[in-house]
Image 1 (cartoon, rainbow, N blue to C red):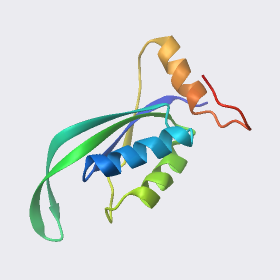
Image 2: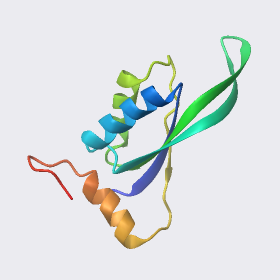
Image 3: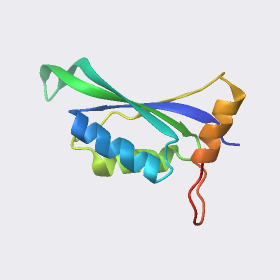
Length: 113
């Protein structure tokens, strides 16, 4: 059984974030992607401490689409090791959660509402 998820992905800038968001929604891998600018990330990479401004994607998807979504992020993302983590949505408005499931269901042909 499929269940709704929220996935998070950081991007280096708004252009990359917009490109990934557009692809995920167009390919029905995500129902909706929120783009949040001006995030500050502090992390270790290649033995050094990094402190970078990034853009956060909040991606609404489903468990059935997560693996394909992660593969699509890897092909579009410029980072060697992009962040793409997911959490189950344990509660929410049923109409919205059903919409997420419907919008990420692969179809053969026509556009969905």
